[in-house]
Length: 425
Ligand SMILES: Cc1cc2nc3c(=O)[nH]c(=O)nc-3n(C[C@H](O)[C@H](O)[C@H](O)COP(=O)(O)OP(=O)(O)OC[C@H]3O[C@@H](n4cnc5c(N)ncnc54)[C@H](O)[C@@H]3O)c2cc1C
Image (tube, rainbow, N blue to C red; front, side):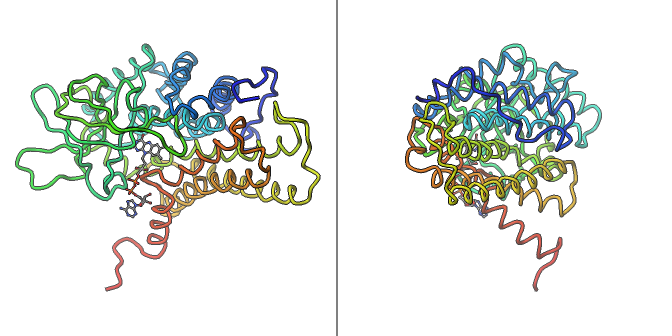
C-alpha cells in the first residue's frame, strides 16, 4: 500500500518535544499539536505525490490557509496565530515530519511574516519608520489572512551573496512611486506558485561608488508583475515538491509599499538576530524524527500496509536503533537549546551553538535516514514507503545557504580560534 492510502485509524504520533518534558508554553504546545495533527492527517497521505511529480503542494497550501497556518507568525493583534521564533520552529518541525517539501516552502513563506513581525520588533528604527513599517506589513498580512496569499523568499543567486559575503547582485533603483527590480535568483522555491516573491536585493543609488550590503532591501514582487519570468527545469534528488526554479526580474516595477522591511533593517537583522538563518532547520529536525519513527515501527512489524513481520529481535537491529536514538536525542537537545537562546545580540557562545545546532540537525537528519535504510533493509526503500523520500529529502539540508554544513564548520573554527579583530601578523 502506498502512503496515499494510510488507514484513517492510524494512532496519533507523540510530540517531537513533549510539552511537559521540554516545558513548552501553552501556545507552543497548542501550535505544535495543530501542526502534528494536520501533518499526520493531511500532509503525509499526499507527500508521495508531490515527490513523484516534482509538483507544488497547492492542495496543502489551500488547507493551510483554512486552518490558519499561513498566518502562524503574524502577530495575534493583527489576526494571526502569534508564534514567536521558538514557537514557529517547534511547529515547523512537526510539519517536516510529514512532508519535507511543504515544511520547507512554508518556511520561505513564514519568514516574510516572522522577519517583518516579531523579529522586526526587536530591531531599532525611528518611531516614524516603525509606524510606517507596521502600516505596510499589515497590507501583506491582510493578503495572507484574507486571500491566502503565499510568499516565496528568493535569496540565492549562485554567487557569494547568499552566504552573506557580498551584496546581492539583484538590484532595486528608486523611480517615482516605487522601485525597478532587476536580476536573477536561482533555486527559488515556490517559483510559479507563490503570489509574491520576497526578493532580497541591493538598492543602487545614483552616483554611489559601490553597492553595499547595508542597502539590502526586501521587496514583495507580485508574481504577475511585467518583467517577472520563471525559467529552468526542476528535477532534483530530493525536496522535489519545492519547485525551486530560477526567477528573472527585468526592470520589474514595484510600489513603495512592496517594501517588507524599511531600508537598512534587513542588514541590521542579519547582524543582530543571526538565529533568523536557522529557520530552515526545523524541517530537517522533523525528518530526523520521522526516520527514527519509521525504523521503530517497521522493525516492530507495524508499518501500515506492510506484512506484520517483526525484525526487532536481532541484536544488530537493536544496536542500530539504540545508536539512532542517541543521535536523535543529541540532535533534539542541542537544537532545542539553540532555538531557546534566539534573541537580538546573542553572545559569541550562543552564535557558535546556533551554528553547531544547524550543522548537527542537517548532517544528522541525513545520517539517521541513511542508517534507517541500512537497518530496515531492502523492502524499506521501495517507493511505496516514505523512507526513501526521507532519505533523499534529508540529503538537501546541508546544502542550504546561508548556513550550509560547510559554512557552519568554517565559521565555528574561525570564531573559536580568533577574537574580533585578531590576526596572526
Ligand atoms: C531544496 C532546495 C530548496 C531551496 N530553496 C531556496 C529558496 O527558496 N530560496 C533561496 O534563496 N535559495 C534556496 N535554495 C538554495 C540554497 O540555499 C543554495 O543557495 C543552493 O543550494 C546553492 O547551490 P550552489 O551549488 O549554487 O552553491 P554554491 O554557491 O556553489 O556553494 C557550494 C557550497 O560552497 C560553500 N560556499 C558557498 N559560498 C561560500 C563562501 N563564501 N565561503 C565558503 N564556502 C562557501 C557552501 O558550503 C556551499 O554549499 C534551495 C536549495 C535547495 C536544495
